[in-house]
Length: 169
Image (cartoon, rainbow, N blue to C red; front, side, top):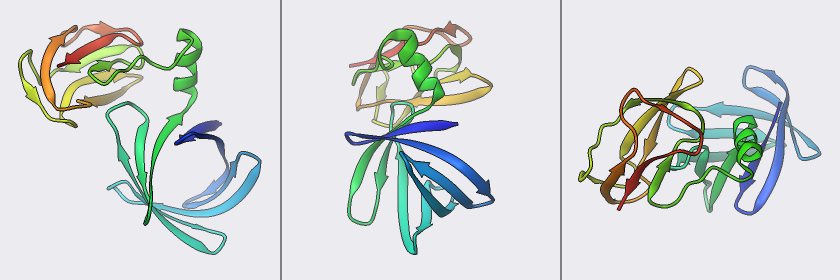
């Protein structure tokens, strides 16, 4: 199974060809690499490839499947485009609808928890809603500092893909 990784403006097709524990054979676009990949719980990856060592820290962003990748000297905006993201794009004709001040459901699911109420002050990165989809719970975080302006759903309600859940002013 292959995924696409959008790194700034470049999109690369990535496929794991073989894996034995932390040793991987991966194909990036049309080039095959042998890598030794170690990952710790804090989002830091150590990669050995072609006799060189790389350390990368992946920091999740408020939008699902978006990260900031930090290396020793640079940082990059990164988006993982997997089967779910391709499905949503094909179904809606575009990427999931997300703007700077809204939290939108990327897929159908059920609202598990809403730890905020209208009028609450939130900081960028605060969890504002938890959705259960495909037997997994995902926390969605505020993309900005602000005040909860509207909550369009309630705990226990079912949501559709691209449905606006919360607006922040």
